[in-house]
Length: 77
Image 1 (tube, rainbow, N blue to C red):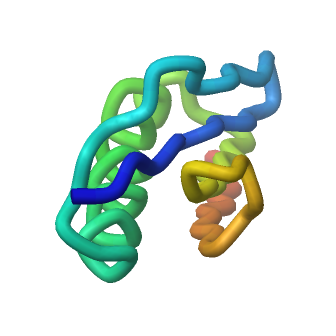
Image 2 (spheres, one colour):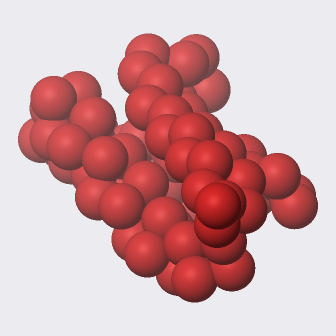
Image 3 (cartoon, helix red, strand yellow):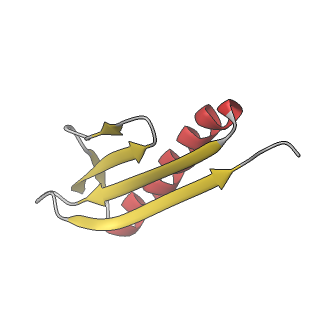
């Protein structure tokens, strides 16, 4: 198992993962980044307007190995 860190950036703030999580490989860590992105989007979408979220996956040396982002714009006509 390898330790991976998931840093989160959105319009309001940034969160650095200081603990990390164990996964068998980098592909599973990438899948976890997508799950995190989905969960954060579900929490923030009801606010409407503009949403921009990025999850960066870092390895145990804190080198970035993967990035997933989502941008959503919504407005009433």
